[in-house]
Image (cartoon, rainbow over the protein chains, first blue to last red):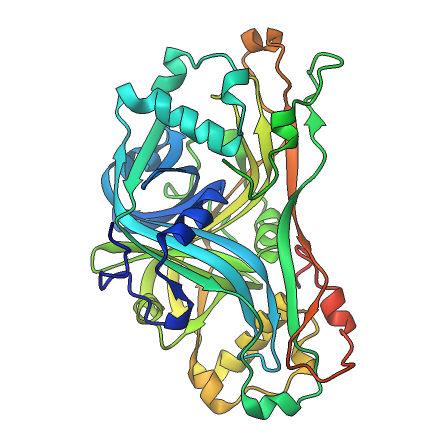
Length: 219
Length: 219
């Protein structure tokens, strides 16, 4: 499989030391994401749409609605760029110039295609199980009209790049004499307590599959 | 000021009940963001670049490096789409079809322009103070060569749209008989304890401006 670092379009020229060529890292970044930012152009205007996402082997699934004009424009073989970025913290350096953020960022270039009707149910199961692990078995089967209103794209991950920024600022040696504090403030996403829907029947317990689904644990 | 809902390109056709036309909500979503996803096209290929961002009145500032080929392509009057999305939770509905996410999403369309040299210092201060409130006064002044290596874009926010999804799933009435749990698992970003840089001089205290900077509090 191509690592994406093979193509001129995905070679990281800026801060190349942050580039990662390990496909396992690509997969880990995507697997920790619930949504991806999908960029494409139509009628001369670029758009970036946040879409629910799930990795399915070496393809990326993206979930939308057939009722969306932009989604339909996107579905018909559009060239796309998909980015997922996790913000991991703020890097306090001793100068504004070296101050930065820690992050994990994955970018996939390719051509989006609709998942055909006969594969849509399986793709929807994959998406549902990624966002809501253990949920599929607890829900009724999708109806035909629901599947018809669902648009799922898939994108082969042949051309991609990953950048990971971690650790502390790299201050200019001259700046180490500055008396200012330097370090990192880490960020993370956390899940709060599940909140019952107002129309939930009394004493319906929160199932284990909900309690186990914390950010980053997505399946 | 135009709300962005005036233009055909930014009218939300899909789930229009989620569209918000209040500029204060746009500002709040952008002000809670450290990074934005910047979409543009060059040589027939769309790209989405995560960039540090800060709102400056009714303009959006975006921070990059003059060393980046894509950034330079972006800087010279490119049509862009900038999206910021905060993921607020997972919505467990009684069907896969109605299962979704809660989020706040802001999209700005426009043309990116370089901040000219004589305004770069002020723009860098705004960006630094947004990401690291209280930091600017604690740091030495930027050097001329640092400013030269810094590329800051600005984007007027004339054309924009906001979508906010909150609350619980809207289940089909037929599905209310399902015995499955329904509700929301809220997500939020939290800051961990500040971590001293390994080369920090002994007993340099963590300043108040660092301790006060928690996600969403950005200035």
